[in-house]
Length: 137
Image 1 (cartoon, rainbow, N blue to C red):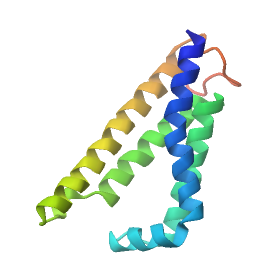
Image 2 (image 1 turned 180 degrees about the vertical axis):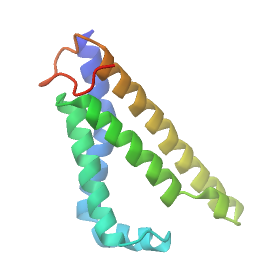
Image 3 (image 1 turned 120 degrees about the horizontal axis):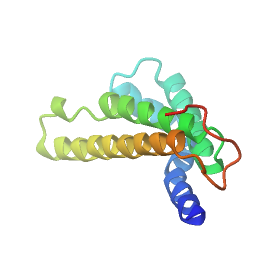
């Protein structure tokens, strides 16, 4: 079972680690997009969110306070959903649909991250992790 959980952690983390890399490698383009969405201090926000995606992804992947990393990802995903994908503001049907898909994806991933948080904070034998949980539920 430990190997199955590890494979799940790897698959889950790949999204956030690749996103973190994209935030660093394409900062200017992402900052322009964030600015168009009204995000304050767009460049700093892109770099900060990239760093947080990277830290959260590494935490879950390596099992270093993975409960905290999961909680960090959940919060970041919900904030990102609201700030970057406000489908309720769109008037064009195609743009609205695209934003709704991305909003729902982020909310669903936040839900998965919250489940991981509960799993890591509740299960006694996590197996194949570097540290135990920071929280105890």
